[in-house]
Amino acid sequence: MKYTEFKERVMAAAASRGLTEYELYGEEKENISVETLNHEISAFSSGTVAGACFRCVCQGKLGYASTELYTDSEARRVVEAAMENACALETEGEAFLHEPGDCYRKMEQAQVTEPSASQLKELAMKIEEAAYGADPRIVDGSQSSADFRRNRIFLSNSKGLDLTHENAYTAAYSFPIAREGGEMFSGFDSKAGDYAALDPVSIAQKGVEDAVSQIGASAVPTGTYDVMFSSHMTAAMLQVYVNIFSAQAAQKGMSLLAGKEGEMTAAPCVTLTDDPFCQESLVKMPFDGEGVATVRKDVVKNGRLITLLYNLATAHKAGVASTGNGVKAGYAAPVSIQPYNFYLEKGGGGTREEMYEHLGNGIYITELNGMHAGANPVTGDFSLASAGFLIENGKKSKPVRNFTVSGNFYQLLKDIALVGDDWELRPPMRGGACFGGPSFIVRGMSIGGK
Image 1 (spheres, one colour):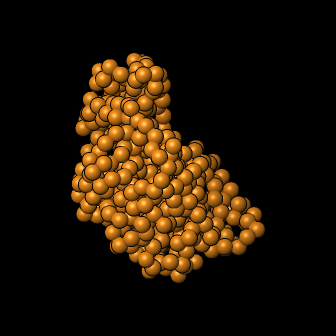
Image 2 (cartoon, rainbow, N blue to C red):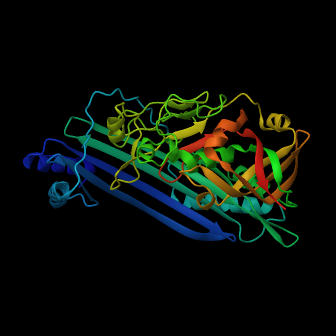
């Protein structure tokens, strides 16, 4: 049975039980993935996962039930199960299903080349072989991978919503390892987009450049340094600390931004944006997991916190409108809060080389390790093993590693002295969100070295 037919059966079963408020959320995920190691294919997987979640309001409570089987009996079962689950809840709470009437942005479906399994294997192998050929110091243990992902979302409810959307892209990765003097140095590069536009040689070469650039790295003395974070590290930091911008976290006392909307919470050069329709993004969404129309929004504008990210429940509690950020991590998952394409806007600091000149003397950080262990997403504190390059007299100098950068993310936002223009958006992370931005400079950070 196709999803559309299953949807009709579920809606009919819900109506027959006298339900007046209910919703069906469906998802279909296709994935082909290839990995290489030591000149051969080391892993391959291909599959499709589909499922649906039924939500209903019963006795004023919201009940859930999900299934991966699209049959008549399952259509009836999920309705019964959701009603039973709602009635079994011991806590009272508001139940929200979105009303129709939003203006949804029309999305032009991009042309997507869907690669075959053999084409993905060829792409991954070309990346690995190009890495070996790019530099004699690249050794066994180097890897590459390629995958194709397609995600379809369906949402219908008793109030008249009937929405669907699809995203699809191919991603390729290079993980070369260089050896010099008995030491190993790992590199990385990735690109995502339409399969036909991916260049395996370029991906491999940039990964190799990343690996060999670390050869000869030394430690730095402990002290206070002016620091420039790379655009990749901007994305990494935003990914780790994105939850502080969630209204759900704020209402649970897990964000220090609670109650600070309208206040200056960052430096005037900082603007943080969540844009579901970002031109450079592979993942665009016209509606969220509750059927609310998504919109581009400045979360922080010129240092001022404009809004947190809301779903229907947190918006109702705060007495504001949802920002369209009610997201489901999977068809059976509860509604949470997440951005779509969350990034630091360009700040006028110029190219990466011009940012080196602005920094003068300091450290350019290109690697942060232990983000989930050394970064506290509630307090904002962090102490992270790092690597990068010295910047001397405005020029990129020798590589450095084995040092620790410490600080607090809330304070870091306030201390940003300059934001560059070397903007980029990283490929989608787990959950579908993309993070990005340009490099930025912070003066006087604590560095633990030798």
